[in-house]
Length: 562
Ligand code: AMP
Figure 1 (cartoon, rainbow, N blue to C red):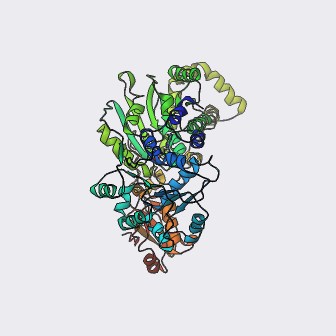
Figure 2: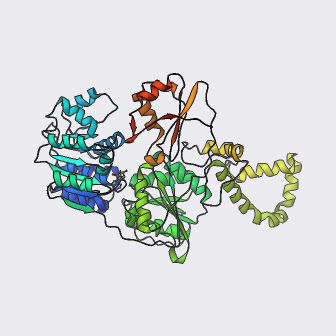
Figure 3: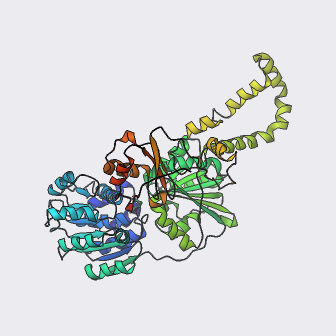
């Protein structure tokens, strides 16, 4: 067990839960965890003010699991979440943290899926129920004793639940729970409606909140990029191509992530190493020395391991995983801009983490501008620029030193000077992709957040190029429609946490049409387009009238292009 897990151990969690945390590679509790875990373990009711990204799920899941008796096959904990996505995410988190607890089972109960399997899992004695309020009420109508044994209740994202109109359902659920239970409420904001629930249904709740002091981060140019979690490595690789960095530190959350990203970077030829709490202190010092003297250019670190790094060469900080709180963000980006130099900090944000970004902006008092991922053309331009600046200074002396050799090679091989120069370039670049098609093939990215590829852009606006560094602009061209399909539009987009799979899932589930009938799905920041069959469209839109995705009304409408 490492020194850092020790911090978790000091909180009083069950050894099996500690073993699971160690296996996922968390090194230390996040601030909300350090404060909430002892309170929940002690059995107090609690109000936690925290948003996604702070580690709030583990803040309640770890102490709850520590207090469950897996030998009793009955519901012991109930977690309410506003949307099916969050419910599934929370249920998965519980399963991960319960890996070393034989006999413990978790059931997710949410709308848009058949009741049967959920009911079966409930009857088989799942100890943890993670549910959306609406569907749980449906189950309660069939069995009003369902929650009679629940000892611990969590309302996760309570403000979102109320926004979605679950107030009445919540009252029904409170009625069905034993009075003696412990109740914990997590909410990003505490409007009067939430306070009133707390007054009525919680007993002497303790408040847990992460204090936010304003911090200044002058001299550091900050930007953020929207990405999906599974695009992060690809995104980092693209960014490294266009960012002109000297040394760089990339922050991730787990030990495993330090190893994975460092090896992906090494595989691409970067001088990169991982730095995490499992690495012995003298080895850590060696890594930092290497970063100082240029034997390494990139260090991929967890917060714990990067503490105290002071390397003036660091020009860039990449926040590959979101920090838990604004203080840790400020701390991380303070690794650059050392010794009065300018620094640049990039933050990767997944759609669910937008709120955290806003909090960071508020606390730092600075706007963290959005940039887009560079497209293949920008990657190619950057590669050519690097090649040019590597070759240009050699030209004069190289001709004096190698001119006669060149003449001889041309004669011996019997080729043109151009052909010979091309062959030498191929060797010099180690076969690196230096045309658009090859760059695209080498760095495929799921469409979504990167800038449009240049071909479409040229068609659309006559060859306008992306802006200067940091402005990987986006241009969208309408795509041609397949025969018999029409485009429909919803006002939900990435800023609502929507991904194509959510839209697809909802339309397949509730529209009852075949997967093949659905064409291209384009997700934008403030809206999304989806291609659907023209035939039967009105009926389909009628079926989807009340459908919600990510907790919000889908409101799909036919979209007229002109
Ligand atoms: P949440 O705020 O619950 O949505 O959690 C955000 C992310 O942080 C999840 O991907 C967790 O796996 C991760 N996480 C939570 N606690 C820790 C921790 N102590 N150390 C590292 N990662 C964590």
